Image 1 (cartoon, rainbow, N blue to C red):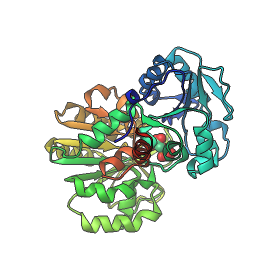
Image 2: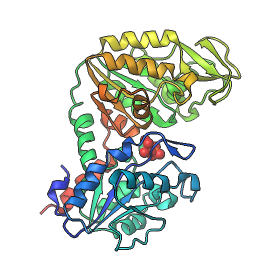
Image 3: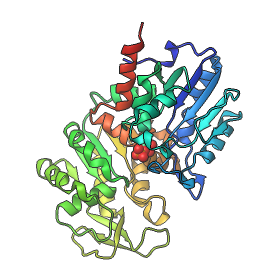
Image 4: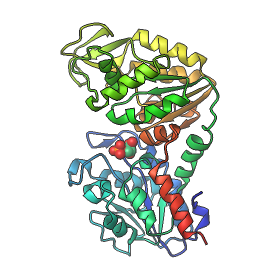
Length: 386
Ligand code: 3PG
C-alpha cells in the first residue's frame, strides 16, 4: 500500500517529481521520447492542482559521479518544455530559485551521492520540496538516493505512470495465462541476476543479446569478440544444468566484424569458428524457432532486443519477432527502454498489450523481486498515514 496523487493536496506546495528520462539518444538527438511523454499527465496533474512549484529530476546514463557534458539532461529539458508547452528552467546546481514555476535539475548521477544512496544527498533533495512524487518506474529497481532515499524524509506518493506500471506488471501478471514465455535480450550484462527467479515462473525462456553470449560461452561455444559477462559464467552454467529444457538459445547468427553500421557481415551457426567476429543479430533458423515457440504462447514478456537493431544490417531478428508478436492475439508485455524503442521504431506500439518504460525494473518485478522504489513508498505510507 502506498500513497497516490489523489491522496494529497498540492495547493501551494513545492513538489519534487522523480522521473526516468534516461531516453535513447544518438548524436545528441533523442530517438524515442516515450519516457518523457508518459510522465506529462503526472506533471500536468500536479500543476492543475495548484502546486506552487514543480521540480523535475532524473538520471541519464551512467556518468558515475562525474559531470560529463555528453550526459547532460539539457536536451531532454528542452524536449520536456515543448511537450508541456511551457517554460522549464534548467538548474545545474541544486539551488532552485523559488520564482520559477517548473524547474528541471541536471543529471542526478553527476553527484556520487545518487548511486551511493547517500543519506545527506537524499535529504538535500527532499529539502527542495514539501511533497515527493515518484514516477520513475524504469529506475525503481535501483537502491539510489532519489529512489529510496527521499521518501525517508517527506510525504511521498506514486505518480500516474508508476501506478499503471505496477498494475500491469505486478498485479495482472501474478497469475499469467500459460504457456508463459519470456524473451530476454539486450545489451546490459547484469540481467542474469533476475533470471534465477524468472525462470521458475515461465514455461520457456528465450535468451538473446549479450545474455545469450554469456550462456553460449558458459556452455563452451566460441563467441569471438562478442560482449559477454565474465562474472555471470558460473550462474549461467548452473541455470543451464538446472533448467536446460526451459532455456532456448540462438542456433545461428549474423556476425559483424565491428560494432558499426557499415561493418562487414557473415552468417554462422552456433558451432562454427567465429574468432575475430562479433554476434550482432540472430539468424534465420533462430527466428523460425522463436516464432514457433511464440505461436504456442498465451502470455509473452519481452525485455531487450535480439540484436543491434539500431543498425539496419542487424535489425532483422528484432523486427521479425516484433512483427510476428504484433499479429498474435495473446497478452504481450514489452519491458524496457531499448525494446520499447524498437517496438516504436517498427510502428507496433499500439499492437502490444502494454509497453513498459522499465527494462530491468519490469524484469525484477516480474521475477517477484521487491523493488526499492516501491518498498520506499510503502514505508513512507506507514510513516505518514494519519
Ligand atoms: C533503464 O534505462 O533501464 C533505467 O533508466 C535504469 O538505468 P540504469 O540501468 O542505468 O540504472
